[in-house]
Image: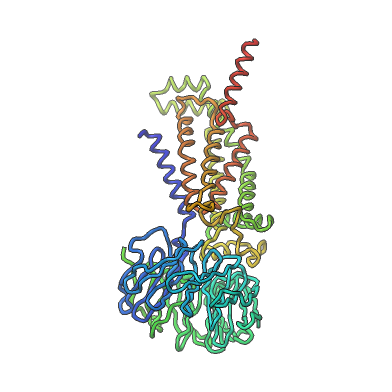
Length: 350
Length: 270
């Protein structure tokens, strides 16, 4: 091969690397999604789903064994003897939670960004193609309900109804058995994080229109809505009559469930993301810059801990410990006590 | 936000989304118009680049240039001195073609990145996009979610046209990218390149590899980018045509024969 040809090929390879690295940056677009059965943590992170021992953070298995082009964005969901995990290449996998082998798979038309909800022996899986797929536990399609835009948030359900918020700015109430629409409500802004369902049948949802909205599950009536000055990239958590969430300016809120009025606010100085975690004596907020901040239920700062990496969701509580999913850090997973002390760190094997 | 973000990416993203709003929230049309606008804004630079390149090509046929090359072929330092003196004498700058290209490069990369940001396909991508939006110019609540549908395509995904009865999708846009890249390369190549000219030989090789390279990118990346490649190629052809620098005979050989016949006819008449 002559020198000219070599130079040209080298230039093209360099250009490919440059252009694809500018565009295919999915590796920085995801955060670890976590679920647990008490003994094992199941974590979807980047190219794999991992099963990790709760006691010491060692890996039991991972799926697939070898990394492929696909990515996992949604936290896997455990149901009976299967683990349901959707990937970015449009495939929903059912895995054996003990061995990590695949039971069945189901293909949709878009990426799986949100976790499914499992209720009444049905998997309700929202997809980026705008459809909510209802599958039986063998992966057979029962029905699908299609919204006008992508579904990025996990549905919630009670009784015979599943509630699905959509990027099309609407929340839908759908009959679990048939997929028939019961009611829908225009929220005025797209929804990224899931709504939070209270025991008394209220839905609380944050939208990209910087609003927190309370919706009655009975008929979709909006009971109150509150506009904020900063963007909300958060899902409210409930403790008694208070909702906890944060905004991108770094403010943490405790607001009344009755009317959305402030009970307290606390400045965390960094963008607050995801759903805070309510423990026995505190509410733990995650900040995008990697800080966990525990506040008392009345808003006093109890402790804080800095994690290497970015946090886009609150930790998952497990006994008296907190499991933290970390994006763009040295490790994707860390277990700490509810007082913020390290227990173990999971480093995925190469 | 760093300087690159503040000076290039953010203004570009806002321009793209502003156009998107203007054209009734159609991201495909917005990408095409945005490419057109940016290429028009940088058109004077392109004119300078073409003129500079032409001057350099003409210089290589200049008798004085050829003499200098012959005379000082064993003395590189003296050759460089004489070349510089000739540049000065003829008023040609060796940087007149590469400097405008260098200025255009960050703009082209900015345009490319703005399109990628605009197609936000995951929550964190969307968060990054929202952070780049000027709230005084655009309202997130009306803008998001972006309408990524254009013709049969989801612009955030690689394009395939699914035809009933076929189990696989056909990458139509990939074919268009390959074709327009090839045509653009051929049209802008000199009509009768000197076979000894290294630049021309390199250009010929680029015309062969570049369409394949662009086709590979269009096949694997989001179709919004492929659409941008097509728009960019077509606008490029239009720009060259406006400047009279398009050699149609390179793509339509029958035009060459016609020209040759016309030339012979003229000679006979003489």
